[in-house]
Length: 245
Image (cartoon, rainbow, N blue to C red; front, side, top):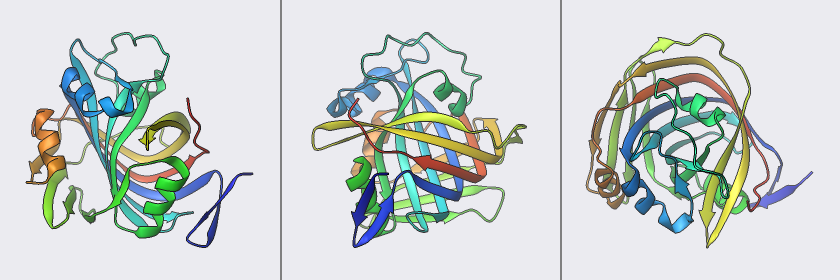
């Protein structure tokens, strides 16, 4: 079993999250703009419609896991695994989870957190682009809100409205996440088991700030109507050892 020493603490693989609350807003964006944003990774965005790629904004409150309790925000893109053939067009009625099951991977482009230990662990173990930021999550009401500030500047203020409950929660789904750090692309085996899932078309309100990441999102066409939003009241997941694809 692989182990990593982070700040004097031994972390055994795979890393487990036993409980987290998650919100996701996914957007159709121009595929060429998405490719420009992630060009450094040498990965290719999936065109879920001709000329359109999928970008997801994700926030999470990790309350029980091997890396401790922390808050996180992420910007991710649906990508073709290295060496894979172009993906066939798919129905946009599928949720983000269903699109992953069709074989595409998730490339994590930006992943700020609010705790130093998980930042170092994420960068060291998986090459995730974690950095410290101020992440204000307001999750006690049906409306889930995430406010991200970096270096004293607003990145975004995202509000997700409640959706319709989805039956069959608790199924384990195997996914592949991808990271890129110091010129190296890595594939991370990832499995999730969500409970208390709610979905709806649209359902997000977003306000962008004046940070450089906000400018990047505006170049993708945000703010705009979300394709789909989802919330997960209880998410368990595991992350395996990173490997070069």
